[in-house]
Amino acid sequence: MNKKIITLIMSLILSFFFFIKFSIEPLLSLIILISSYYLLSNLDKKFNKKYKKLSIIVSIIFTIIYVICDSIEKTYTIDIINRYLLVNVISYFIIFYYGINSLFYFIDIKKDNNDRKIYIGNKEIFTESRFSFIVNFILIFVIYLLFLLKFYPGILTFDSFNELSQVQGILPLMNNHSILHTEVLMIFYKIGNLFNSVNLGVFLYMLFQISLMPFVFSYVLKFMAKHKVSMVIRILSLLFFMLHPINVIYSICLWKDIFFSLSFVIFSIIINNLTKDNDYFMNKKNIIIFIIISLLVMYLRNNGLYVVFITFVVLFIRYRKTIKRIFPLFLSIILLFFLSKTIIFNIFYIKGVEIKEALSMPSQAIARIYKNNNITKDEKKEIEKFYTNKVGEVYIPIIADNTKNEMNQKYVKNHFASYALLNMKLFFTHNKEYMESFISNNYGYYYMNTYYSPIFIQKTDLNGVIHSEKISNFMLYMSIVLVLTIMMIIVLWNLNNKKNILSFGLLLPVILCLSENIKNNSILTLLFSIGFYSTIMFILYIYNKKNKRNISIYIPSIILWLTMLLSPVYSEFRYLYPMFLLIPLFIGFTFKRED
Image 1 (cartoon, rainbow, N blue to C red):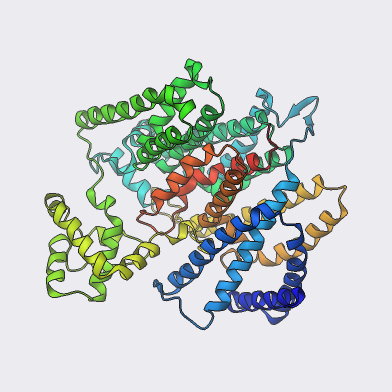
Image 2 (cartoon, rainbow, N blue to C red):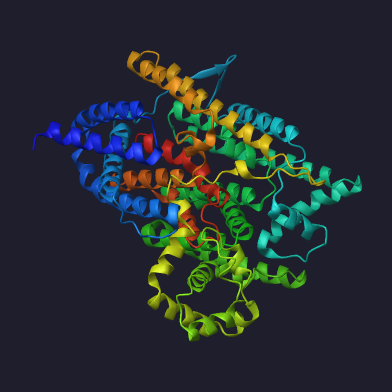
């Protein structure tokens, strides 16, 4: 068949796909048809042959995932057969195949280690100098401080109040929010208590947090400058840290996840350094920092232990020559963690994480089966030994909190072998429901159409006043500012290229028109989709692995992402916030020419 006819057919399918999926106007469908035909007929000529087979495989995988997730999002089932199935399959494959190939092509032609310079007075900025570090710190800190003053004393959620209750002695100390973080919060609470103000204590804690975040982000920018990452990417990275609504909002959220994320970023950078520099641990200072950061990652989140341990294992397999001689250090860190944790927990009578937290996924599957009543009397009787008979009533496919709270934890602990056997039996007799339950409870971590935004975080002061609407408006404002600022920077950087300026000039009114309602805007909502950033990470990882580049900096994030597949919530941005913060480094190192 003629290539032009094939391209036209693909363009028609794509325009119909967008029409049925997003309910767009017929005129816009016509524009998509014309644009698709133009793009598809020109892109294929530029693609590098070495990526085509890889892109086909990756596109098939993504297509399967997205067709299934489309069904999950609508009905929480994997019943994908419908009259639009063929259109969806072809459209997703075209989008991913051409998108991935275009990205790879763009990276190949845009790798840059430019030496452009920017000055404040007679001092150069965006370098690895102390002056640049201070400038970056101040710029980020001021934005966060203004936001904190606007939403005094900070953003508190249910988890925040739970941890604060432990600090106040209302609830017993537990490790569900990390005892280390609880103790840090307790210091600021006691200072505030001296002035009879819990609000003041929370505010002082937030001041500490908004000082720590710019410090780490400035270090990342310095690290990028040291490794000669492109100047434009470093500037965009500064904007990312300073203006991205997620970073601005999270800067004043009272969660352990923020401390964990900052430690995780440093941990990932150290992993990158030690796999590239055989003498990295010849410096005692580096060893001490690595021990402290590794312990922080393990102490601040329960899955931090898996991240550190599995990272060590992967490094030992992949970089054996470099890692073998320092393997005793890795082993010592793990042993030190368990020893110190045991001692601290025994001294302060701290409760560990409840068993129901680790069994969120099987609880969801059992609740789904129980609710559908697709079980025998014997199976129902067996389930009711481990759960109350309300477990089916409270089942919500995308969050496990309700179902796991119906668990008889004492009985599960004492009869864990029977519990495991029950799950095994149910899996073989109800494997479809297990699969649907599993995907329903984690699809947001890899499906970029999922929108789970901190816009819905309730900002609550300790008197119970809620200001979530103000935060929603602020998030929208910051989103528009970020997008327009990035566009302006790119235009200024390409003043000598009239085609680029024309392209961005045409995009500007489109962005403005789409910015009326962030919840219904598929462009701006990508800023708040953790699945979008996961997709970026994996595609960049594939590109770098294909080109035999160092991919060690991705390892902790990929391991963290894998642990999210067993998460109790289908899509919680803060759970993968560390990976999100590393996106500038992933992009910067990808576009950097090899030394």
